[in-house]
Length: 368
Image (cartoon, rainbow, N blue to C red):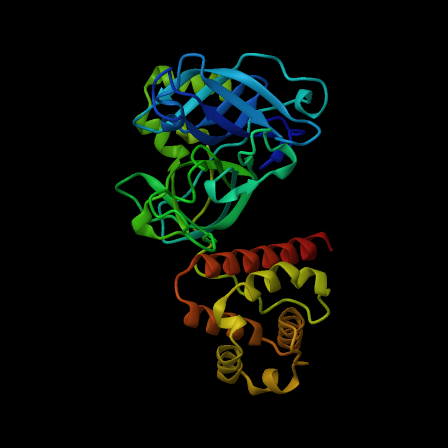
């Protein structure tokens, strides 16, 4: 386990862009994501580096920022069965933020139960390609870069059991401009987090699952698919517990959406902002007719008392503020939205923000 003073959870400075160049004469290489688990070690997906030239792997941190660092790496472990790889960085970190202590992350196992859990991942998918006029070559050809994507959503633990992966429900890209290529290309290898622990590594985007679903290989399944030698290497270099029993375990207690009945009516508006952001991204909320239908389906006092506004965010803030004054109506409102929207990445985000709001309130109560 990491020391008590370790920085827990996702640290953006340790998120890696993995560039795998092919041998001479081969087709184009691959790009992926990864996470630095120690001073000289990066976890990623095996398929990202599978066909790289022996000296063809580069790892980049903080691209185009003041602390950018690009370093060659070699593959020391690549398991096709588990789709996990470990890279060794071949140069020391430069002075600055990259040279600070890099203890291994905390690794966790999710329960095999009827439960959905909030999760997040950070990587460099293809839909984050951006034009870069400031660095265009002299020949006039376009210059591009990939920006980071901090994807937040939910995982339904019992999906993809045969494949041995977690199904991640994230907000889908707005459009699919290249049907022959996944907009999530480049996200493979990103570490997946729940409650400050690394629980999986992104492995695939199955197009048949839709644009808002990714698959990630579970950390606890590594103990079934990796050899003893491979597990020992991950233990010694990446801080993986030597046996699965030492993984952080989560009880199957977070079934269903969070309940917000006990939120105080004096809750500051800034506390509601993430929930408002999730709501205003949903078609059922953006459509005035559907939103009116939702309000008519719950306590009529909410529709009557809410300060309505033509500005969507202001309107939703007013609805939530009114719901806080009438016990139980906030849960009624969110449940009506879920019924209209169905199972979607947007609803997964809504549920995550509701759960985080509930947790923050519980922690505040405990501290008082």
